Length: 51
Image 1 (cartoon, rainbow, N blue to C red):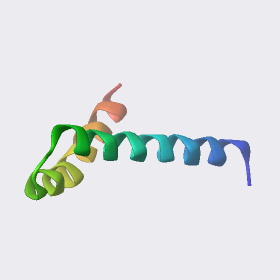
Image 2 (tube, rainbow, N blue to C red):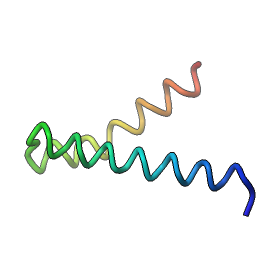
Image 3 (cartoon, rainbow, N blue to C red):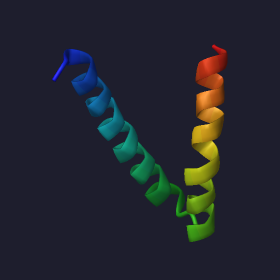
Image 4 (cartoon, rainbow, N blue to C red):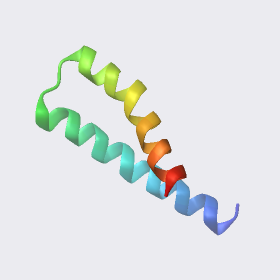
């Protein structure tokens, strides 16, 4: 396993933990959680590729 892939995995785990914390902190209803799972990565990817 290369160094880059383990760093990406660690970043993904931290991102996922933060995402779960945010859902719990703002007390989102289930349909807003589903909407966030579907829509937010699209906008994130768009911002990363544009920059």
